[in-house]
Amino acid sequence: MVLRKILTDAKIVEQKSLAKDIFLMRLHAPDIAKAAKPGNFLQVKAQRGTTLLRRPLGIAEARGDDVSLIYRKIGKGTAELAAMQEGEIVSVMGTIGNTFNLNLKKPLLVGGGMGLSPLLFYAEYMKNASVLMGARTSAELFWEELFSPFVKEIFVATEDGSKGEKGFNVAFLPKILQQGKYDGIIACGPDPMMKKAVEIAKEANIPVEVSLERRMGCGLGACLSCAIDTKSGRKKVCKDGPVFDGEEVFF
Ligand code: FES
Image (tube, rainbow, N blue to C red):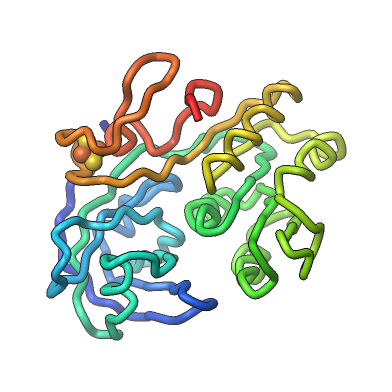
């Protein structure tokens, strides 16, 4: 298990809306910012919140003494986070989890929706990646601006066709792979998207990693709430992941 168990109270230094119900929260957390590597996640909750369970959120940026999280308001825990103001305190556990492959020479990132968040950290850290991003609509493509300083190429697909190609991003993956000589794919997003990305990568004979998102209780490998079946047996997303060899996972 790769867990640097830092339980800390972190001050919100920036909280802004990026799109409807999507927020960026920047936290002052020097120890976590120093330890963070792309792929790691944090377990967070509002310090004065009413929810007991922490919410697992992939790290989107780690710069200087700060780490940023990008999240969608979808349940009670994230609604409590979204209601918080700059200056308030969040309880954070982390960093947790393993990392993406940091040795790729020409990675292609495949991200859908909030799955783009941990890929953003990877893009900034590596500075050699290209990204195929998928969103429901152009209103959720603030990601382009966030990724553009760090990536070689950006390919865009929206489900409603309001920007880029019309359809799911993975529909365009085979064509992109034909045009560029990528040495690895890193996918994060909805399970059907990752499943398709793994199939296509296998066909193209390119290694693929996936970052899984599962409901989590303890975040410490103790409660089994995040257990998944893989080709090498039962694994815990918090303890053995969240990054897995795509071909190992049963979607
Ligand atoms: Fe408890 Fe993973 S969250 S074992």
